[in-house]
Image 1 (tube, rainbow, N blue to C red):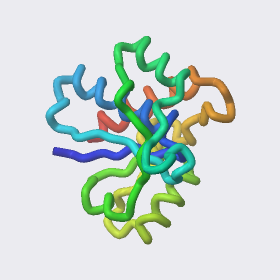
Image 2: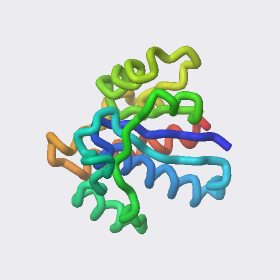
Image 3: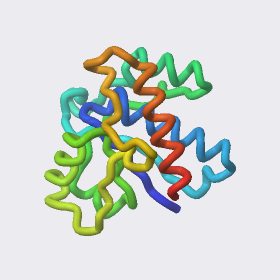
Length: 152
């Protein structure tokens, strides 16, 4: 089983979107049993007293519109010990990649990557927290997850 952890800043927008989209794509391809998929944050900004915030409402609406239910998802913090648990850490932008490597004290096994590097047009995944363009982020995540699934 391939273990994938999608990573973004707060784990309420891009990384949970990628977690649910990838999981659905793998299921539709008949490959769900080959993957263990989750997501996490590089900061604790969306985690209060050890309890993470839910998926951001506009992201939740998009996921639900496409048949996914993120109601049980809560933000969780990426920990140094996760490096030994997962095979791939998939960040949404260069800041996420830098933060992952800082948390892990490097990347000796080359497990840290960017989602859009698995596409024909490498770029950061648009951050809807700032752009408010959730559809653009959705499109990026769809493209990146399809590329990652094809790669794996």
